[in-house]
Image: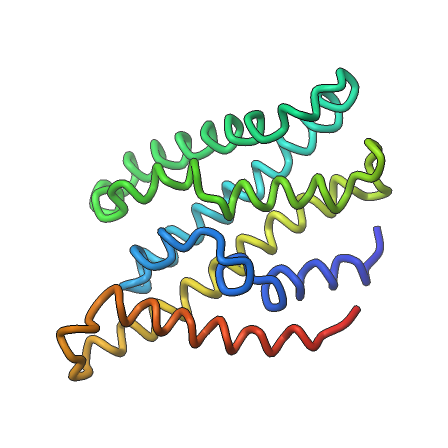
Length: 202
Protein backbone atom coordinates (compact mmCIF):
# COMPACT_ATOMS: atom_id res chain seq x y z
CA UNK A 1 0.00 0.00 0.00
CA UNK A 2 1.07 3.55 -0.75
CA UNK A 3 0.98 5.89 2.27
CA UNK A 4 0.64 8.87 -0.06
CA UNK A 5 -2.42 7.29 -1.64
CA UNK A 6 -3.98 6.69 1.78
CA UNK A 7 -3.32 10.30 2.78
CA UNK A 8 -4.85 11.46 -0.49
CA UNK A 9 -7.97 9.36 0.14
CA UNK A 10 -8.24 10.68 3.71
CA UNK A 11 -7.99 14.38 2.82
CA UNK A 12 -10.10 14.07 -0.33
CA UNK A 13 -12.93 12.14 1.34
CA UNK A 14 -13.22 14.43 4.36
CA UNK A 15 -12.41 17.87 2.98
CA UNK A 16 -12.08 18.19 -0.80
CA UNK A 17 -14.89 15.87 -1.90
CA UNK A 18 -16.94 15.72 1.29
CA UNK A 19 -19.86 13.43 0.58
CA UNK A 20 -22.40 15.98 1.83
CA UNK A 21 -20.87 19.40 1.29
CA UNK A 22 -19.11 18.75 -2.03
CA UNK A 23 -20.84 15.76 -3.62
CA UNK A 24 -24.28 16.68 -2.16
CA UNK A 25 -25.19 13.09 -1.33
CA UNK A 26 -27.20 12.06 1.73
CA UNK A 27 -28.80 15.46 2.26
CA UNK A 28 -32.11 14.14 3.62
CA UNK A 29 -30.61 12.72 6.81
CA UNK A 30 -28.14 15.62 7.00
CA UNK A 31 -30.91 18.21 7.22
CA UNK A 32 -33.38 16.18 9.28
CA UNK A 33 -31.12 14.65 11.97
CA UNK A 34 -28.66 17.52 12.50
CA UNK A 35 -30.85 19.46 14.94
CA UNK A 36 -28.99 18.07 17.97
CA UNK A 37 -25.44 16.83 18.36
CA UNK A 38 -26.29 13.54 20.13
CA UNK A 39 -28.57 12.09 17.44
CA UNK A 40 -26.32 13.54 14.72
CA UNK A 41 -23.32 11.69 16.14
CA UNK A 42 -25.32 8.46 16.50
CA UNK A 43 -26.51 8.68 12.89
CA UNK A 44 -22.96 9.42 11.76
CA UNK A 45 -21.57 6.37 13.55
CA UNK A 46 -24.27 4.24 11.93
CA UNK A 47 -23.31 5.63 8.51
CA UNK A 48 -19.58 5.01 9.16
CA UNK A 49 -20.36 1.40 10.04
CA UNK A 50 -22.55 0.88 6.98
CA UNK A 51 -20.12 2.56 4.54
CA UNK A 52 -17.18 0.56 5.91
CA UNK A 53 -18.90 -2.82 5.91
CA UNK A 54 -20.59 -2.25 2.58
CA UNK A 55 -17.21 -1.30 1.08
CA UNK A 56 -15.82 -4.65 2.22
CA UNK A 57 -18.70 -6.78 0.97
CA UNK A 58 -19.30 -4.91 -2.28
CA UNK A 59 -15.60 -5.18 -3.17
CA UNK A 60 -15.69 -8.94 -2.58
CA UNK A 61 -18.90 -9.34 -4.58
CA UNK A 62 -17.60 -7.24 -7.45
CA UNK A 63 -14.18 -8.90 -7.53
CA UNK A 64 -15.14 -12.54 -7.09
CA UNK A 65 -18.69 -12.72 -8.44
CA UNK A 66 -19.64 -9.94 -10.84
CA UNK A 67 -16.37 -9.70 -12.79
CA UNK A 68 -15.65 -13.45 -13.23
CA UNK A 69 -19.22 -14.16 -14.39
CA UNK A 70 -19.45 -11.00 -16.51
CA UNK A 71 -22.29 -9.60 -14.38
CA UNK A 72 -20.90 -6.13 -13.76
CA UNK A 73 -24.13 -4.60 -15.07
CA UNK A 74 -25.76 -5.88 -11.86
CA UNK A 75 -23.45 -3.91 -9.58
CA UNK A 76 -26.01 -1.26 -8.56
CA UNK A 77 -28.71 -3.69 -7.50
CA UNK A 78 -26.13 -5.93 -5.82
CA UNK A 79 -24.71 -3.01 -3.85
CA UNK A 80 -28.18 -1.85 -2.78
CA UNK A 81 -28.98 -5.33 -1.44
CA UNK A 82 -25.76 -5.40 0.58
CA UNK A 83 -26.40 -1.93 2.00
CA UNK A 84 -30.00 -2.83 2.85
CA UNK A 85 -28.85 -5.87 4.81
CA UNK A 86 -26.41 -3.85 6.93
CA UNK A 87 -28.94 -1.10 7.54
CA UNK A 88 -31.39 -3.67 8.84
CA UNK A 89 -28.69 -4.94 11.18
CA UNK A 90 -27.91 -1.42 12.46
CA UNK A 91 -31.61 -0.71 12.87
CA UNK A 92 -32.11 -3.85 14.98
CA UNK A 93 -29.12 -3.00 17.19
CA UNK A 94 -30.27 0.59 17.80
CA UNK A 95 -33.84 -0.53 18.44
CA UNK A 96 -32.63 -3.02 21.04
CA UNK A 97 -30.03 -0.82 22.75
CA UNK A 98 -31.73 2.61 22.60
CA UNK A 99 -35.47 2.65 21.83
CA UNK A 100 -35.58 6.43 22.41
CA UNK A 101 -32.90 7.02 19.80
CA UNK A 102 -34.66 4.62 17.45
CA UNK A 103 -37.89 6.61 17.80
CA UNK A 104 -36.03 9.86 17.26
CA UNK A 105 -34.50 8.65 13.98
CA UNK A 106 -37.92 7.59 12.75
CA UNK A 107 -37.99 6.97 9.02
CA UNK A 108 -34.49 8.36 8.47
CA UNK A 109 -32.73 5.27 9.85
CA UNK A 110 -34.26 2.88 7.28
CA UNK A 111 -33.54 5.55 4.66
CA UNK A 112 -29.82 4.77 5.00
CA UNK A 113 -30.76 1.84 2.77
CA UNK A 114 -31.32 4.23 -0.12
CA UNK A 115 -28.88 6.87 1.12
CA UNK A 116 -27.02 7.83 -2.01
CA UNK A 117 -23.94 8.63 0.11
CA UNK A 118 -23.58 4.96 1.08
CA UNK A 119 -24.26 3.70 -2.43
CA UNK A 120 -22.00 6.42 -3.81
CA UNK A 121 -18.92 5.21 -1.91
CA UNK A 122 -19.46 1.63 -3.10
CA UNK A 123 -19.70 2.76 -6.72
CA UNK A 124 -16.76 5.14 -6.27
CA UNK A 125 -14.59 2.30 -4.95
CA UNK A 126 -15.29 0.25 -8.05
CA UNK A 127 -14.66 3.16 -10.40
CA UNK A 128 -11.40 4.19 -8.69
CA UNK A 129 -9.80 0.89 -7.76
CA UNK A 130 -10.72 -1.36 -10.70
CA UNK A 131 -9.17 -0.80 -14.13
CA UNK A 132 -10.30 -2.79 -17.17
CA UNK A 133 -12.04 -5.33 -14.96
CA UNK A 134 -9.02 -5.90 -12.74
CA UNK A 135 -8.37 -4.73 -9.20
CA UNK A 136 -5.42 -2.39 -8.82
CA UNK A 137 -2.71 -3.23 -6.30
CA UNK A 138 -4.04 -2.68 -2.76
CA UNK A 139 -7.55 -2.18 -4.11
CA UNK A 140 -9.28 -3.90 -1.18
CA UNK A 141 -7.50 -1.87 1.49
CA UNK A 142 -8.01 1.38 -0.41
CA UNK A 143 -11.73 0.62 -0.76
CA UNK A 144 -12.17 -0.13 2.94
CA UNK A 145 -10.18 2.93 3.94
CA UNK A 146 -12.20 5.11 1.60
CA UNK A 147 -15.41 3.72 3.11
CA UNK A 148 -14.19 4.74 6.56
CA UNK A 149 -13.05 8.19 5.39
CA UNK A 150 -16.31 8.95 3.57
CA UNK A 151 -18.14 8.07 6.79
CA UNK A 152 -15.81 10.39 8.71
CA UNK A 153 -16.49 13.15 6.20
CA UNK A 154 -20.21 12.62 6.76
CA UNK A 155 -19.58 12.81 10.52
CA UNK A 156 -17.63 16.07 10.25
CA UNK A 157 -20.43 17.70 8.27
CA UNK A 158 -23.11 16.41 10.66
CA UNK A 159 -21.30 17.59 13.78
CA UNK A 160 -20.56 21.03 12.33
CA UNK A 161 -24.17 21.43 11.27
CA UNK A 162 -25.64 20.20 14.57
CA UNK A 163 -23.34 22.49 16.56
CA UNK A 164 -24.45 25.51 14.54
CA UNK A 165 -28.14 24.62 14.77
CA UNK A 166 -27.94 24.08 18.53
CA UNK A 167 -26.43 27.55 18.93
CA UNK A 168 -29.18 29.03 16.77
CA UNK A 169 -31.77 27.77 19.27
CA UNK A 170 -30.60 30.60 21.55
CA UNK A 171 -30.93 33.23 18.82
CA UNK A 172 -33.91 35.30 17.77
CA UNK A 173 -34.57 33.80 14.36
CA UNK A 174 -37.49 35.03 12.21
CA UNK A 175 -40.31 32.51 12.00
CA UNK A 176 -40.20 32.51 8.20
CA UNK A 177 -36.72 30.95 8.11
CA UNK A 178 -36.77 28.73 11.20
CA UNK A 179 -35.79 25.08 10.95
CA UNK A 180 -35.43 23.76 7.38
CA UNK A 181 -35.07 27.04 5.41
CA UNK A 182 -32.28 28.22 7.71
CA UNK A 183 -30.70 24.75 7.65
CA UNK A 184 -30.39 24.92 3.86
CA UNK A 185 -28.86 28.40 4.08
CA UNK A 186 -26.30 27.14 6.62
CA UNK A 187 -25.54 24.08 4.50
CA UNK A 188 -24.95 26.32 1.48
CA UNK A 189 -22.51 28.53 3.38
CA UNK A 190 -20.70 25.47 4.77
CA UNK A 191 -20.46 24.06 1.25
CA UNK A 192 -18.91 27.30 0.01
CA UNK A 193 -16.39 27.09 2.85
CA UNK A 194 -15.42 23.53 1.96
CA UNK A 195 -14.93 24.56 -1.68
CA UNK A 196 -11.78 26.31 -0.49
CA UNK A 197 -10.17 22.89 -0.03
CA UNK A 198 -10.38 22.34 -3.79
CA UNK A 199 -7.04 24.11 -4.07
CA UNK A 200 -5.30 21.04 -2.62
CA UNK A 201 -3.44 19.00 -5.21
CA UNK A 202 -1.86 15.55 -4.81
